[in-house]
Length: 125
Image (tube, rainbow, N blue to C red; front, top):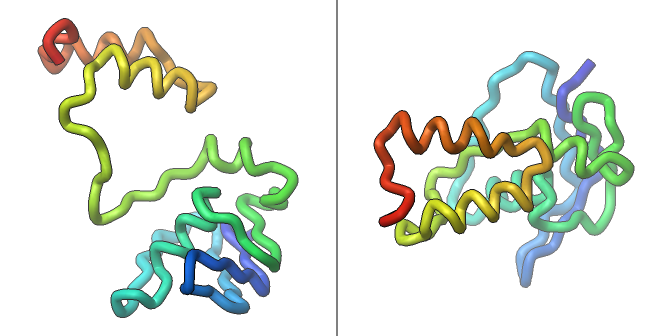
């Protein structure tokens, strides 16, 4: 079984369009996507993780049809970008609230343990 299967996917972001993308990634594979700036690498991954919407085609992740199982798929997916987009001045309390609301499996107790373990002063930060 393929962990990711994309057939005929199209996505549009502003003036940029991905057209007729076909991709099969076997289960257990580690994959890097290489291409020129502006080729659509980030658009592909942001479409796969639900940040952008596809305009046509099919996507499956671990055998689940994306259109029927988006929430379940996103809970078990991670994408690492080359640039981290976060607010370095965000308070720990706010981050905890955001994570709790956006990740149904968020473990607040474990979060607190990590805050203590790394000596992060949650009152100041």
